[in-house]
Every structure is written in structure tokens, then in C-alpha cells.
Image (cartoon, rainbow, N blue to C red):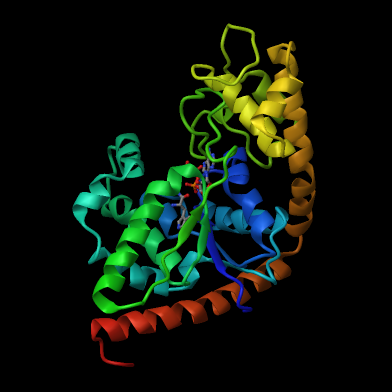
Length: 331
Ligand code: ATP
Ligand code: LTN
């Protein structure tokens, strides 16, 4: 790898990737890939905090990795791999568990939300999930972590753990920074614009899947919940309209203010149609590449096998350093 700064990010293979994942994460990965050495993982270890069907999970993991490439990530220039293929993630995660406090983990809002959602299965993995995420990041001496704003708290925990560890053992880990986009940091559900668009939402009308066809996208935007005021403006209390304006701005690359001006005097119907059109056009090239790539299994296989090899090499280096600092006998 060249001496450009390092990026690490990942998405868990649950549900199907949404417009939220695309605008909050994937699109930025593509934009950043030329200026950084990038490591993008399908974080399959994270996904089993919720019970998964093995056959479906295996297929979904492949679909997610293929989507990374279809979005425009160059899998040869960058490292693209499955988290479970590099055992150092689980190994460092155990070690970092011993440097994370229960008080810290208790404060994680994602843990609180997910425990409420899966009250019948509040497993220890759900609780220590942010520690595994810290291990993902710290293994690669990562400089920058591009994520949506919902991951900010996890990232701060990662930094705290790294600073604590370095405080005891010297300069072991690079302290990573977050890269959180402004407009697209938090895309909201189309059915409940006060909660985030989530790929595990049981209501499929709440999210746009990045593989949805144009008719489905139009239909979902048409049904999007708005308000009864009829005025296109961006302000508190207009969650549905704010969300549509955010999506439109993120896709077109213009500011929210410019979008508000563009729609001045027009009705909600027009806004919904234009947002749908913009999203369809944004996703079209990715969907075409995706269809091609799914036919090329050998290529995909080569990308993730090579990816795991390169990632494994980098991760082993950090893990070796950690082991030495802790006092383990050399292998
Ligand atoms: P789940 O519903 O299974 O919890 P998710 O949709 O929240 O999943 P993650 O795998 O947790 O997706 O997140 C992957 C990346 O996408 C993260 O960087 C996250 O911040 C980003 N992301 C997820 N949802 C949104 C959203 N609605 N808006 C912006 N970014 C998002
Ligand atoms: N927890 C993240 C996914 C994730 C991640 C990471 C993101 C796992 N490990 C490392 C960035 C860096 C989420 O979005 N739910």
C-alpha cells in the first residue's frame, strides 16, 4: 500500500442496503477512494447479534460485497473483504473488551434501541458490538472512518478505548477520526420521518432499497409521509419534507437552501416526483453494474480472497504489537 492515509468502514449484511446506507456511507466511500488507502468490509460477524438463517446470510454477504463494487469501489486498488475471513477482528475484540467499561457500553444508544427491539434476545454480542467495531478500526491503524451520524457514539468509544490503551502501553493504535457527511448523515424513514431509514425495517415502504426498480421507487416516494401545510420549507416540525429535501440535496450535490429555492411555490407532489427521478437516475448505473457483476462469480471470489489476504497481513501486524505489549510469549 502507498503511504496515503487509511480509511476503514463497513456495513453489516442485514436486510438489504438502503438509500440511507448509500448516501450516508457507500457514496462517500466511492468519493474518498482515490485519496486514501481504503479497507471496506462486509462486517458479517456483527450481523449475528440477530438470529440469521445460514443460507440467506451467505447469499446476503455476497450481495453486499457485490454492491460495494457496483457502487464504484475499485476492489483491486482497495481492500474489500469479509470480516469473518480475518480472525484478528475477533481476537482483538476480546482484548479490547478488557479495556472497555460496562458503564460506557450501557450508555450506547444503539444498544438501548436494539435491546428494546429484540427484547427476547438481548445477547452479550449486542452489548459488546461497539468493541468489535473498535477492533475493526484499530487493527488497520485507521485515520478516517466514513459513517452516518448514528455511528458517532461508537466511534467516540473506539477513540476512548484506543487512548486508554495507548495511555498504558505507549503508541500502539492510531486515534481515528470520523468522516460524517452533512446532508446525508441521517436519512429518515419515508413512513416515520422521525426515525432513521433502516434496512431492517419490517415496513418496506419506509426505505428505498438500492436495488428497487424505478416503479417501486416512485411508488414509495409517492406514499412518503409529509404534513398538511403544503409549503416546501426546511424547518423544525417538517420532518417528512426536511427528509425529502435532504435526499434531493445529497443526490444532486446542491445545498438544502438551493433545493428549497428550486421548489419554491411548487406542491408536495412535484417534490416527491423529482426526488424519485433524481434517486432513480443516481442508482441506475449502480444497478446495471450490479446485474453484470452477479454473473461474474470468479471475479468477485478473487476480490474477496485477495482482500482477506491483504487485510490479514495488516491486521496481524497490529495484533502482534498488541500481544507483545500485553506480555504474551512470541509465537
Ligand atoms: P440495521 O437496520 O440492520 O441496524 P442500518 O440500516 O442502520 O442497519 P448499518 O449496517 O448499521 O445499517 O450501517 C451501515 C452504514 O450506513 C453506517 O455507516 C451507517 O451510519 C450508515 N447508515 C445507516 N442508516 C443510515 C441512514 N438512515 N442515513 C445515513 N446513514 C445511514
Ligand atoms: N456498526 C456499524 C458497522 C460497522 C463499522 C465498523 C462501521 C462495523 N464495524 C467499522 C465503520 C467502521 C454500523 O453501521 N452499524
